[in-house]
Image 1 (cartoon, rainbow, N blue to C red):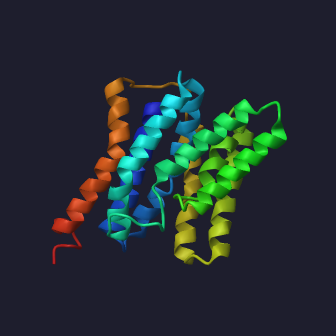
Image 2 (cartoon, one colour):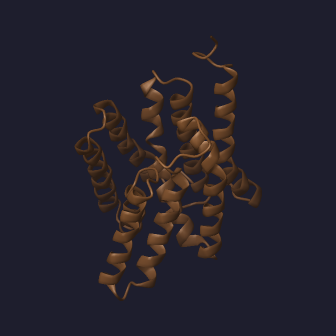
Length: 233
């Protein structure tokens, strides 16, 4: 699978997740499918970091899209324009990108690099970004193990299982922890990655960035207009 194929799979899984949340809350399968998307996006951040010509520009694009998406995200998830309970997933990916950059900048001072990355994990939890510390941990794990498929599989799987265990220990509903366990299925497309970019153009990149806030807005409108079951009545 190319980067384009992974992006498409991640986007479709994310839309299924949010559609399940907003329109079909009793259809657990959609939430399970949605758990595949975040590891794919973390992997794509790693690939983007390794191939971008300007890390700061990449970070600014993520930040701008995250800011533009926050109100639609809060409207969809919490039913109001602003909520401190959770921040959208693009902030998680941005923190992962920052961790990758810090790990490289301070590669000759590993203790300092570890401190910065740990601080980013704590910051993710303090700011209540989606998935908490997982974005930073996944990005770093995937970057450091991608040259060895076995290490990549075992390490990524271990991080995802640790996150699921942390959910259970935090007291979340067992059904939600089970959905999180389904994130392990993301390893299938990740292991099929062929290192190629596939379809690529500025317009396609713009569409993938724009798809995040636009699909949130579309779901908010659909739910408000009650044009998809079970919201007819």
